[in-house]
Image (tube, rainbow, N blue to C red; front, side):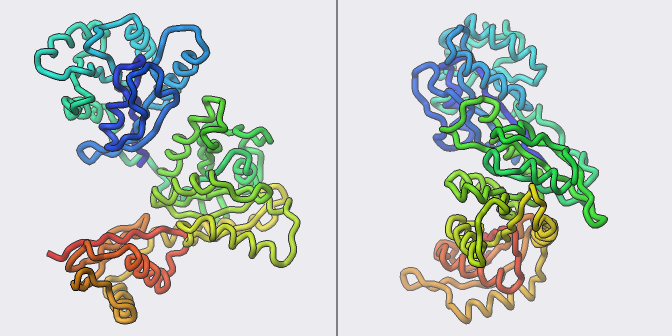
Length: 436
């Protein structure tokens, strides 16, 4: 299920970034009492009453002709376009301004659900100031205080009421869904076309040609798949076109909908830091991963080249040591036949369940071979392990003292599980709990 998207919109200096930081629980947006500090959209995840959602902090919408202000306005408009629900932020101390009314007109045109928040209501005596905001036409204003955290519960209650209802809207749950992510111009669209055998997606040497995520059905060896192509994710400092900046959130939404994520690397350019950041999105989301080295035809090679390149990938992507690597060329279609079997393998392992008794035999053998650590004279005791979920495979390790479990020993147990059951292509999660 794709997370709903909430955008916080308003004129500058009404406290949008402060509320954003409160909701996500960490200081991500720069909070400074200067208009226009948040220039670009900033994305993160929030949760309220077991509802998880993506949230966007936007630059303030300002009325004016300066290019900088026009860019902020355009950024906010794109965020509004992608949002399921909009929090319209205003400031009680300044009342309803002409700029608030301009923002209101923009939001009315969007036809999206809008929840009106009046910020900086720091004490009960200030609540009367909210009544003027009924004139904006969005119903009941919600008084909040970003600096003190007051009223956020009521505001978020109203926001989640507008979330799309969960339903069985996917009629292709039995199909493996896989997405392609990577920097612009690594050949994702060419790879989609090579798999489909036709020019279904626009292909160009201009970085960022693919703007949106596009779903395409693929039939291969009598099995059906869904390909989710995405716009290329480009390093923030290198991006100047606003629509390309927004591609990161769209790629994250594509990852959420995928069973398997193909991390596509350009063999000509080699590995750069942004490739690792992009791959990290898939790993953190718990999706199965296949690393695809595209444009392999353009590399001068000998019998050692592939092995050396593979070692570079392993050195750079230490957190993806479980991901298989496929070398191919989308243009010449050389080795393209090796990709789908790897996607199948990763998908199967992503859903793999292990019998509890077999799992515990492996863990107890591992503990006998490498005894659990001690802390201040107290030894960690592992009682039993059970699998509690798939996609990704998730295990709970029941112990006497969870705080004694060192990450290195947890890593050792994960490696033993992988050695016994494979799990190639998928991350696995180990959770340590005290036995009650």
